[in-house]
Length: 142
Image (tube, rainbow, N blue to C red; front, side):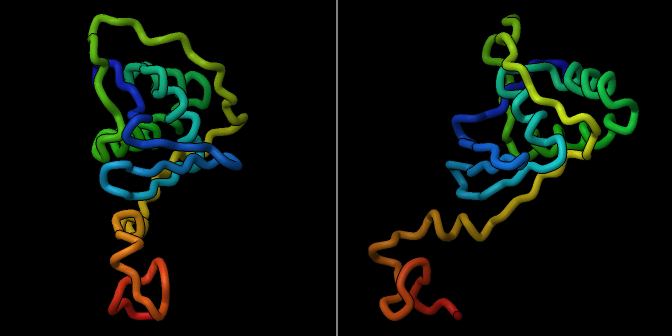
């Protein structure tokens, strides 16, 4: 991963509340939740950074126990297509917004919820059980 990566905040609008970041995949409708140090990693990726440099920063801050979980988290972001490559490989990353790093390392976690995809993709006017109302489709079991 030698190229700069950016958090794809266009496809994955997000908000951080009480130390957890909630994202919605605007193309597929999945809901994601980042916990541990995941929100700070996402925030650091928002302005672009080489993932190896980011892991080095985390290692310098938290020591060797941060390496494997941080790499695994970044790989999970890559596999979920939450990161995009630098559109201009020679460009330097934008200046960074100060990040409030926690005093101790807590492994980042990515949770995915698929049920929300059905609710988001549902047509609330035409696909609603008249007896149960939204968000129940005709024939849904209670």
